[in-house]
Image (cartoon, rainbow, N blue to C red; front, top):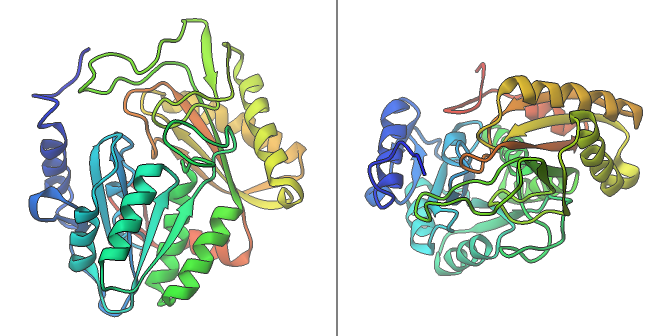
Length: 329
């Protein structure tokens, strides 16, 4: 294993310190590194908190800032944050209008965020993201996994919160965006968790994992490597089939890298996915391409499609200023 680290035991702390120092105009680090929060809060606004295991950067801490999250709780690599982290974040960012937890559908994340909600006296609602169409469950989940579609929910709901929407409205909006969003991923290589020191799974040089999860969980099947158009055909077909009658009209197309995929390849995938969506009668009205929901050093990508309406499109276009995603204020 070759990693630019000092020790697996200090990796998260040192990385978080560097991250916040590099973006101290936007962010500050909570006590004992329990959470990352916005440097400037907006009193009276509903506060958005998310989080999960580290290793998916820039999700979630990189999406803390104006127009998105108010705080993010990072767990150890691929490990859920603990309830005391969420409670500390709640105390730090509660502006008096309530809080919304945005949680990926993994058992540890759901359980720990739910425990924190029950332990807190604050008014808290939860949106659970479950956009992965590849499999219904895995080692980490009950039901669908929450993957790159989580970013879409955080962006749209974050914009609405910035514009003054109340907690009940944001909860309904988050659930609606999640229901209109589908994702699927493919891995060409495994990822390597620093503490383990070896690849999470073995895969041949001529193989790929179709439908892989963001922790390296198994997908739909292991197959021989195919040309990019064929890979996209499988992924777009699964997404459109799962959307059913909703797969018509304008959409956001988000091509996400898993950490070791060059942008040249991501844009090639985007080109193919956009063309194939058009063949299904889906118009790509909004786009995002880049590595935003990663799996450490895994080579591969995911495709996310969110079916837009006027409100979701407008909120997607709204200003945002975070470490990872910026659009003019």
